[in-house]
Amino acid sequence: MVFDLFKSRRRARLRSSPTPPAWRRILEHNLDVFNRLSPEDQNELLDHTKIFLAEKHFEGAGGLALTDEIKVTIAAQACLLLLHRDTDYYPELTSIIVYPSGYTAVEERPIGGGVWSDAAEDRLGHTAQRLRALVLAWDAVRHGAAAPSDGENLVLHEFAHQLDFENQRTDGTPALERHGDYRSWARVMSAEFEALRDAAYAGTPTLLDTYGATDPAEFFAVITEAFFERPRAMRKLHPALFDQLQRFYQQDPTIYSAEPVAT
Ligand SMILES: [Zn+2]
Image (cartoon, rainbow, N blue to C red; front, side, top):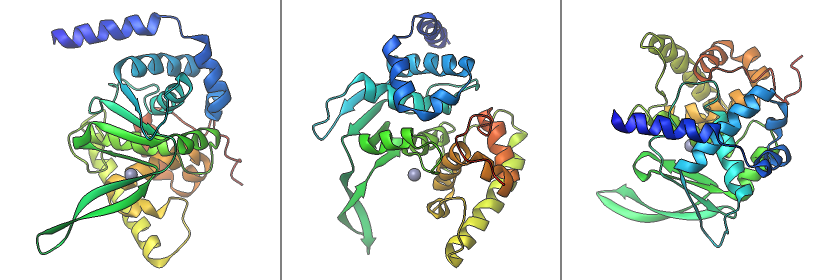
């Protein structure tokens, strides 16, 4: 626990250090939602951003030269998921790798009969528990930060996966605050996941991206995007889901959302 004490002292020192004024200007310009948060939440987000940037390693790839603009725009979106919560800072994650735009990943995949083959896939972002890294395309990050209510946000999606990893399993269930919370979480999530699978199969239009029907881990990432980007529609169409996420994320994005008021 000596290490934890050292860590929490270092974080307290970082929190009380002054925020570079340029960071606030970057967020006011790039991150639409930042301008909608209360002054208290803006300050809390900047404090989290300071700690995040001090603790995580950033790397430019594909010829991208990293700037404060890139790092701060990514870090603040990641930290929106930490606001108001008594939480660690993505302990399963060491590095963030940023490409200028979409990139092609080559991965070994089983093709049956014990044979593996290289498969190429175009991606905007990716993370996996064993990697301890998270990969993002900067143009998609910037677009997501500027478009707060189109229902999609690459950074929120990938960092929701990181929250899922915190309890050591990639199962769509992050570490909930109280033991008693798991029962209602599981009940609501399995019903909503089944409903999304049915809608995906039937081709019914849905608020939630049907990519979330892939598996429970993708489901958690997709509902996180919708909770922050389309909270009013989610509260109306999926009230039990909204309630679970509001409890987990300790915030109500309907208060600051740019989403048109549901009629
Ligand atoms: Zn995903």
